[in-house]
Every structure is written in structure tokens, then in C-alpha cells.
Length: 421
Image (cartoon, rainbow, N blue to C red; front, side, top):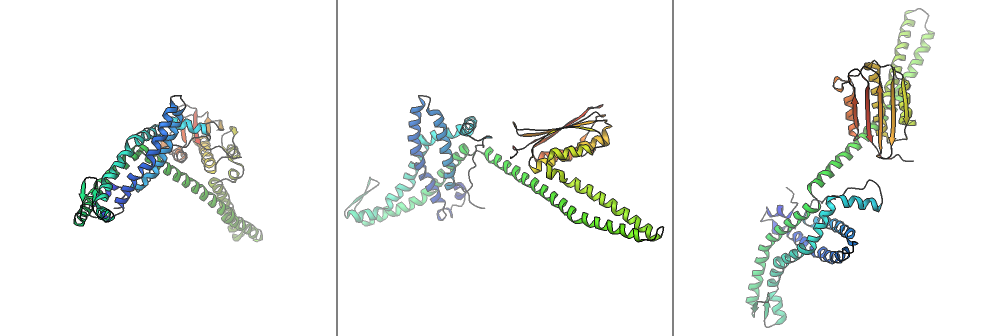
């Protein structure tokens, strides 16, 4: 098992003194002075300004800044990085950043940590370094100090050494004491790092980051799936479809050359008709994989085309810019599936298709309504369950209102970034 913290290093007591963890523990505690002393000075100045109601925002900023430094410094004591608990503002600008930071619990935890670190923690860390390393170092230096003084020297300002046997005995005691004190030093460094992580990088932050990474990887899978769909559509269009067209033309020419009414002519006519049907089915398949109108002209034109091909008359109200490919594809197939269900199951005489992009919440809304008999149930295999899963991948929702007797209303909402120019 990889050792990732000082506490884990202490579970191997014999290997611990020979590892890097004594040095990492000492470095972490010693570097506390580098951030704690300046933090004390800055907080003292800002507290004076806060009397005039000027320093409170600056205090928050100081806490955020120190929190970022301390999370980086935590890498000295622990292998695992500390996650940033702050979220990115939805809109750019200093004002939006300040508003988000002021509402976050992490900002106030960082301010509390800054006060605690500046007033209590770094003096305790310095005291631990002085006891665990300074005292053994003073004993170890006894022979050197006696050689420099040539007569006598005091060790730890209390023990008078006048001879080299005494000096070497003090040095031996210092070596033993150093080895013994390395263990509590690591325990203190581990506790100190655990406190820092609890205040500045709590577990919910790490969980949020993992969820964010899962969401990003899911979005990458959606993009890859859409790219693969388009590749298959292109290969079928440029490969198999062209070959079928050539085959159909060849069979048609052979049919013209065959004697009328002969068995060969009949077989060629049958083969020509079959090839034409296969070509028609292939074109429908290609259109279902990724229609060219969707790629060329966007979601609005593709939905209008789907409404024109619907078995039930459809009134359309479409006002859409170009949107990301995955979102356009999901919304298009949601609309197509809803229109197909109207034609197959609803008994409706007319339908209405509405699509809007709202830049305020950055959301695409698609509404499909009919005047049919209602009673739509996704559990009966209408394809709506699969659509709901596909839309959920994009953090969208699919809502169905279909009371018995109608009407049926399908609402699709998909969050999406503002479209580029």
C-alpha cells in the first residue's frame, strides 16, 4: 500500500525513520511559520480597517488567498492533492466573483482558518519543531561547540560540559532523543494536515469534484457517440448508398435488354424492384442516423422537416439559433419520437411543435402537444424511456402530461451554453 500521509507512515515504525516522511513532516510544520507570521500581520492591519467597515471584504479575500496557499502547502505532508471547494461563477467579472465567494461556506471556513492559523497554529508548529528538532540538535552539537570554546560549553543553557566524554555523551543522548521524537513529530504533522484538510478541503468538495469529473466524462462520451453516428451516416451515404444506386441502374439497364415477358426479364424486374426498396430503406436509415438537414441548417430546420413528414398535421413555432451538436441531436430525436408516437398511438387530428432557446437560464425548451386520446405511458415501450435517458445524459429533463382522454403534452428541457456567433 502506498503511504500517503504521516499517520500511514507511522504504521510502519521500523521503516519510518529511513523514509522521507520525517523530513516531510518537519518541512510541513516549519513552513507554517512562512505563512502564519505574514497572515498575523495582514489580519491585524485588516482588523483595524474593519472598524471603518472597509476591511471586511478584504478579510474575506485574505482568507481565500491564504486558503489557496495552505491547500498547496498541504502537499508537503500528504500525497493526495486538496480540492478547491469554491465553484466557478456563472458569469465573468469581479462583482460576480465576490458575490459567489461571499455566499459560500468555504469562504467563511477559510477566514476562520486564517484567524486560527495566524494566532494559534503556527506558534504551536514552531514550538513542536523547537522541541522535536531543536533540543536534539543542541545536544548533538555539544562536541563542536566544546571544540570551538576549548574549555567548556552549556548544552540547552542548563548542562555544563567541560570534557569531550561528556560532550560525546550529550551527542549520543541527542541522537537517541532525535530518533524518539521523530514519531510524535509525524503524529503532530498528520493531525495538523488533517485539520487543514477538514477546514479547507472537506469531503463534500472532493465528492463534488468526482461528480463533476463523471459529468464531464459523460459529456465526452455523448460527443464521441454523436461523432460516431455522423461517421456511420457519412460512410453509408458515400459508400453503400452509392453502390446500391449503381446496382439499381445496372439492373434497370439489364432489364431493358432482356426479352419482354421472358423468365430472365421477370427475374431482373424483381431484382430491380428489390434493389429500389433496399435503396429507399437505406436512405431512411441514413436519415434516421443523422439527417443532413440537421448538420447543415440546425435544429429549427430539422424539426420543421420532421413536422412536414409527420402523418398528423403539425403547426410549428420554432425560433432557434445553432446549438451544440449533441444538444441539437438529442432534441431532434426527441421531437421525432414524439411526432411518431402521435401518428401511431394518439389518434390525434393535429399537433403543435414549439421550440425556444432562452438565453437567461441558457436552456432549450421543446414542447410537443396533440389533441389525441391521451394515456401515454413510457413503461409500455413507446420509446420515451430511452429518450428520457438520452436527455438525462445532457442534464436535461423530459416531462409527460397525458391524462386519459387527452391532450398529451411532452416537454423537453436541456441546459446548454449560449450559442457562439
